[in-house]
Length: 594
Image (cartoon, rainbow, N blue to C red; front, top):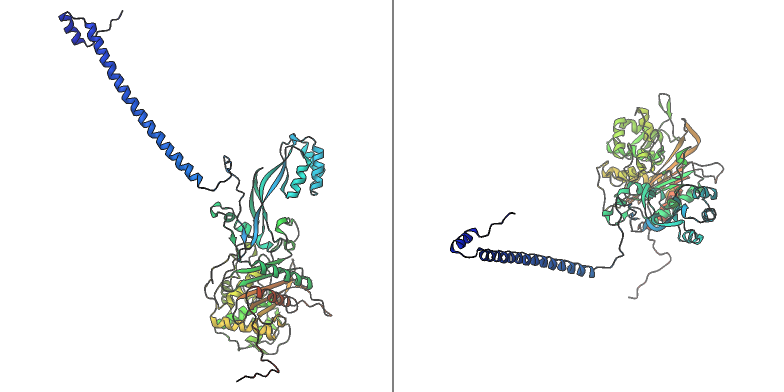
């Protein structure tokens, strides 16, 4: 047995010496210790209660503040959040320069199936095939009766189709919410917008991604949630675009052309107001890419951007303008036009015999190949190449479209003297109508370089100077004379001083050489010529005007009338007031009462 010593030992020993009972001392000591422990525990408990009370007070304050905040906010439907990387289905709208919708999103549904839940797969397949003619009944039955537990049936449904599927009553047919890209104007501006499709897909949402045009180029911007749904505003004018397409389609039909393109550009800002390529397509139902044959025959091919052609005599104004800029000639300088011009085994001829010489202005007005070639010889290959580079003809246009890099110009391997002469009148170098629009805008706006853009601008670009203002003015006067008394006489539009240059180039064969009866006809115009605001390029592929005894294919008979009608239609839409001559009243006598 272990005995526990009594406490406190010193008092116990003194008590024993005195004959007192030590148990009383130990009991008293135990009582005192218990009272001390009780007081310590009470203090600790009171401290804990104080801390807990403070915590409850703070919690009630936070909860009360949060309840007050929620009471002052607009109620919203709660949304469930998913774990992982969600599919972003939102995509910003695309609008024209006036805020009108070009592309937007529409809430729709997809249709998928759980075959294991179907009561009668064959009947469901038969009824689905009757609702959707593009689906084959046999294929649906095979998919519904196989081992798969999930089957996509259709990615998009209209409300009417959704109701028809709902009426089938099969528990294995299910709907999933999603967004689809909608182009409310159909084929209007189809090549510019391009189109969209689905990327990652789920039963409750789908990722909408751009596949071509500005939809593809600005895909990251349109899908960025940081933009908070702000639309992408283009430089296009929807009304002008629709009118341009209508006129060009009519001209293409009348002139029996295989295809057509037009570009309308602001000469100061570089904004593309309208850009048309025909034939076109509906981006709501984008066709498939051709797997064989010539891709330029596809309606997806953008002739204004991707189509590079020898554009012919529309290049002559660049040569004469550079000659004036270098001080080699002026508008009245007489140029030797005796022909043919011989260079080795090559002979350069004019369409007509214009006599021994023409002024520089008449070289443009009458479109003399020989006269232009002689000016080019004075300029030289290096200076010609540098000038065309400053106008953007030696590289693809930087316009904001994914197709732009594919429209790089075709340049001669060896920029020889004969290349210098042929390029001066638009042969030996292939470029797109958009290149030509940018070149004419840079030359005629006062002489400063502009870059074509599809984004609305705040003001003029004020790029590097390519020619002086005086040369730019003289070039405009020359182009005006082409319409007044030259090859573009059908381009006159009453009230608008139109200036321009025609160009007719034989179409090259795929394996070399040129066709005898196929041309690319182009009219490059500026209006008003005295105060240029817009450049318009119209190009027709293989046109033929057949109202006379013989087919007429030159630009003066084909592209020019189409461009004139387009200017007549769109100039008022652009806010340009016609300059109408005010005539004095005839047969009226003015009197006064005084």
